[in-house]
Length: 77
Image 1 (cartoon, helix red, strand yellow):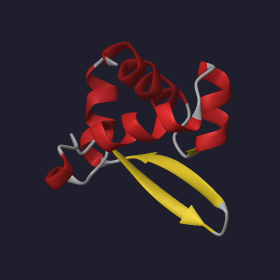
Image 2 (cartoon, one colour):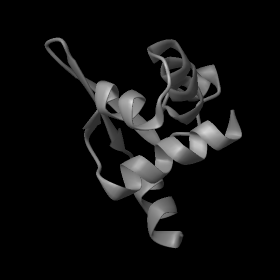
Image 3 (cartoon, helix red, strand yellow):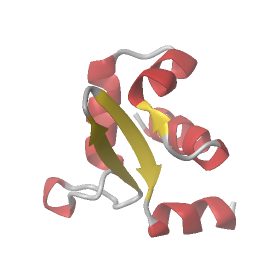
């Protein structure tokens, strides 16, 4: 799972605001796998999230955005 989290963060560091479909296709993973990873990367600390990624819903389209903490992590790399 750690490798998947790193891969998702790498994609978002390269292009913030990607759709969930873009990421799962680029990484060759299923949506359920991506959803589990987003719980860990997400900003819902009550669910154990790290606060690195936030999800925005625009109609049927779901986009993934780095939080300030996520952007800081990208810049530190």
